[in-house]
Amino acid sequence: MSDDRQRIVDSVPQKGFFGHPKGLFTLFFTEFWERFSYYGMRAILVYYMYYEVSKGGLGLDQTTALSIMSIYGSLVYMSGIIGGWFADRIFGTSKAVFYGGVLIMLGHIALAIPGSIALFFVSMVLIVLGTGLLKPNVSSVVGDIYSENDNRRDSGFSIFYMGINLGAFISPLIVGQMMNYSFHLGFSIAAIGMFIGLVVFVATKKKYLGLAGTQVPNPLAPNEKKKVFTRIGIGVLLVAILVAVGIPTGFLTFDSFVLIVGFLGIGIPIVYFTVMYRSEKTTDVERSRLIAYIPLFIAAVMFWAIQEQGSTILANYADTRTNLEFFGFTLSPAWFQSLNPLFIITLAPVFAWMWMKLGNRQPTIPQKFSLALLFAGLSFLVILLPAYFGGTDSLVSPMWLVLSYFIVVLGELCLSPVGLSATTKLAPAAFSAQTMSLWFLASAAAQAINAQVVKFYSVDTEMLYFGIIGGVSILLSIVLFMLAPKIQGFMKGIK
Image 1 (cartoon, one colour):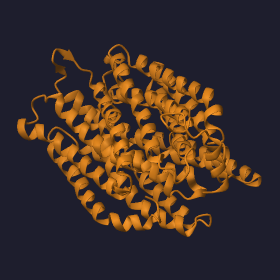
Image 2 (cartoon, rainbow, N blue to C red; image 1 turned 135 degrees about the vertical axis):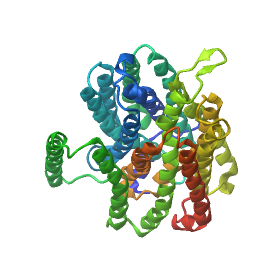
Image 3 (tube, rainbow, N blue to C red; image 1 turned 180 degrees about the horizontal axis):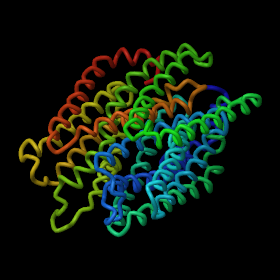
Image 4 (cartoon, rainbow, N blue to C red; image 1 turned 90 degrees about the vertical axis):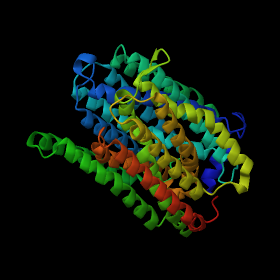
């Protein structure tokens, strides 16, 4: 650990929030409200797109809406690279979190204003850029408040992850109910949630976080700043020109845009791995750890390709294939989005306790990832069973969706908090925030792929769709488990 990093850790109170540094309180509740706003918006967004105008929606084609949802999710996480770069080179992670929260709030406000599709896309741009600044950097600050060998680290990330999912659990229940009255009322609640998150962060960061997040790990030299900002300005101008010319001429269509994002989702991680590996600022030990990180990244892409379909294919399944009359209650299809975080809230403390109890006897990081892929595959095999037993002509019990969400959560708890922690451990010192952004690029790549894959889903292909994707995940799980000892060797002492 560098001297600067050690000073940051030492300057923060070491206990005070469930036996963890007090800074975890600030980060826990900041992320709680950010996820409240994001998942509340996401729970109703796909319905807002494909519901008829007479029902308050935009009236888009259903398949198009599912692809847009995947592309939007991909861009949200892809923008983390931008947020990581700004944090590493210009203003640090703490300011990145604040600026990101402001942009997210403005994006939700834009969604809350009844308007055209153009206003919808403006809101998407704001939320994409804001989440790119906030999401990876708030997780990086969590890593900053622990020393590299602090045994509470994995447990701390599990508690932090519980805060994420507490917000994600509550918001679909509230916003999902509001969509029965107005989609825009639901989006307004999301905006309020982000505002509260900003207040919590600003009010407590100085007292609880100390220096964490204030250091710029790899700052631009004064003579570099002018060149960089000039290039950024030229880049933005070129993109604006391409959009202005491409759309009227038919060169830039939705299908071509999906294809471009797909290439970016796969290409950007390859470029980043290459740049970090070849950098003079990366040591030989850090290069070895980067090699170990590659198969973990690929496994994460496969896992998120399944998990993220909870807001697309399974959301559509809840709306069109599920019997929403349950024991005298009429369920909102958006409420199913609360299942994933509900199970995580319930099980995260169990997993955190289990890893602490097992200590050195717990599965290695690669083994935990292989378990995650196994559960993800099984969650898709489960959801094809209703069609196998009863056909696709009748509505199915909502309990099938409940079971599928439950199984994938078992995998998520083996992968997501563990992956966050592993990323902070394996990251080269000069690329700390950017490596965290790279972790979120796994989800970006997964959803860029999903934007193409969801086109193959229909009632007629339902069993084949779930069966093939679930089977591939289980196969990769077996391969990763076999390679786990080799991968662990490249981690050079990281457990």
